[in-house]
Image (tube, rainbow, N blue to C red):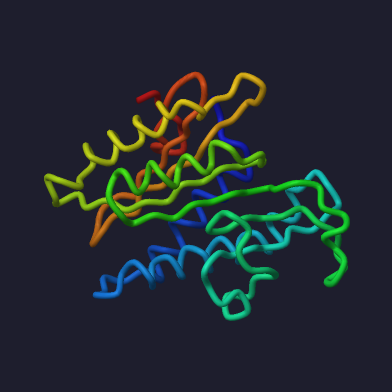
Length: 203
């Protein structure tokens, strides 16, 4: 099993961007959410990602519950915390050439049930890529690596995660707080895989 080029870029960009821009803070949830959205907005509009596309449409970035203009996105909320929409280049009427979603993403810093609740939204979305971003504390017994892996396993067991008519798979990122290793997982019908040393290893 291998990562696609876009999946690889998503993992790389999130780790690089958040490592540089995330800081421990009292208002962590709000500021971290904004940072992750900004990260994915930059990636979705990047020239590097443009070269990987197999279609002529542009990605338009839609962001939920945030001042989209400040984050340089195109539109506001569209069900998910963030999505890349495949549309035409015209600013006003590009939506008339809508061809689906390239990415749908949910960002959740809450408890396990909060994460599972948001993950279920991804299970009903038709998109090229699905991304779930959470955090973990590798110094905590209650929210460490074991806790994160259990969350990943429970997400994979969601009843509608892998519908028979679609080849769904999911990317999950565990951002360490305050410090630690980024945890990157891929979930698909064949199992759960963790990205280590540029390779996917079965969990």
